[in-house]
Image 1 (cartoon, rainbow, N blue to C red):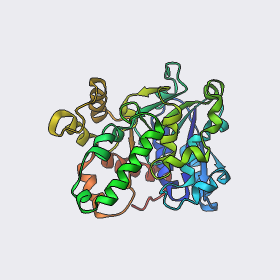
Image 2 (image 1 turned 90 degrees about the horizontal axis):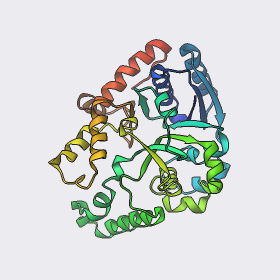
Image 3 (image 1 turned 120 degrees about the vertical axis):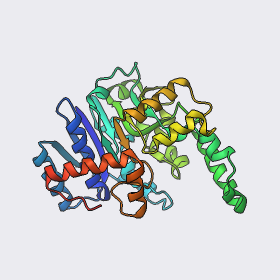
Image 4 (image 1 turned 45 degrees about the horizontal axis):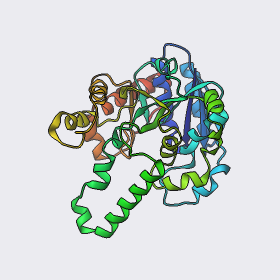
Length: 318
């Protein structure tokens, strides 16, 4: 079972915790490949140590950044080149693979994902719950800060509209998150001959200020992806999302009953916690301690981290 991570030097330890949690929950042996950006000898040694202590098969390949030199020159983008790895996987991998972000904690058996029937589609993923309200949150909604900086607010709305126009459809339940994706790379190569254009810079330019890899994948595979239940890619704010769905707020009033059921299931039985955004459980700060009290995802991470440190002997300084 092929598992692929794209990791820069800053995320080596979080990636290893994710890999350890994935292997602990898997019902079959897993083979993990880490494509690394900016690694030094200490990073390779750390990966080797975790692999040896946990009986994990982890190989490391250097990430070829030359294809994205122009992307890295755009200083306003907040994502490293390695974030674009998923766009290259159809060229690099044979058969089916699971691509997963480093900022995750796996609680379920990912073999279920890998063996799933994708319904004839080349990839499978989960709806991005943050994009379900994209139109209202980013374009229709007026915040107090918009009134104070109307020109800036207008520019942001234009940027979001341009992104939607580039996608060719309105983000919603038909837009997936690229943090947990099953790719049938053989099928992509056979059914999508233009897959080689996935990483073309002119195709990425409309999305460099948002989520270039995710938007580009959604543009390319629009209407051609299989939807996994949301429990396989759950963000820590899921209980807050459910409260909105249940009518305390109006933001999710247009969602389908199926999606509401997915959110309810994810609240009670998350299979993968995905720590999207800037608030990570391994970062220091007062807000982290507060979130550990309030959110189950952060509690689960602390408990997993304790077991990881015991088994590997590696101290994760939080």
